[in-house]
Length: 360
Image (cartoon, rainbow, N blue to C red; front, side):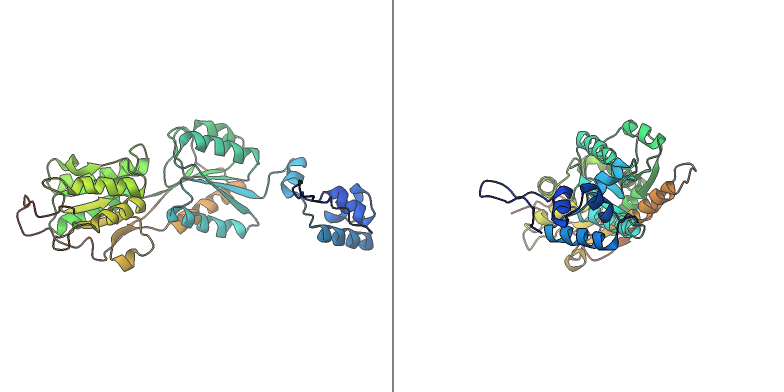
């Protein structure tokens, strides 16, 4: 037999071999080659072996998605739409979901919106066109009515971290308000009253809930004008660093900081490293644990994103298996991990001392 894979000349990019090339190399018809590779029972074993050998020699792979779609079936994939592929929080969600889905022979496909509502909708449409078995969505938009028809037609949709709007669906959330309240109470107990907040996009439900918990604790402690040190719409390390510098450069800077996600915590830490060595750094509590937080001694409000992904996958599988009960909302707990940065008391000197808190 002569190998029929099309040659790749200097001006031609290599192309994948087709079923026709496999058929020609093995000396059978395209239909017989297809039946052999798909395990059809009416193909002689010797013929099937010859076809498989030709396919391996050529590097041919069946297009599983195309085969499934031609037969009218859904794929073996589940879509996960997240905010940012670079954020470890989302990678842990994916890890938890993938472990559950893989045990059922399903594959997780992950894509990122970069917190762009329009891109979220476009990516969701692409996933639906692929006929994924289910959708797991960390939403960035504030209207998910466009998914109502898909859910009504039987596509399981599960929302993670943030609640949906405009569609009823299973949802897994963190107890954001209680977690923020715990963080601020911890700082208040250490003696702080001027507490700054570096927060995420104000349109996000998680951010609104964490600010609400911040306000709950400050009002309960009788702290007036607590919004004075509140800064929002910081979604990356650079903006968090800039806002932290801004807070600490005030005549009466905050003596403690609460950062509402792991990226804001990182940005705050970058700003804090530039404080003069003889001056006291403000205390710091961050929402979300992160790698090296234990080494750096950063006090955090922790939670379990792997568990969030695991539960989301289980809810999706339950819907795939025919569950028709009302949509569930699961709220996962948070807890404070004290490591040193959140336990520092405010300075004993007068709060208006210009030598306190200035940046280099």
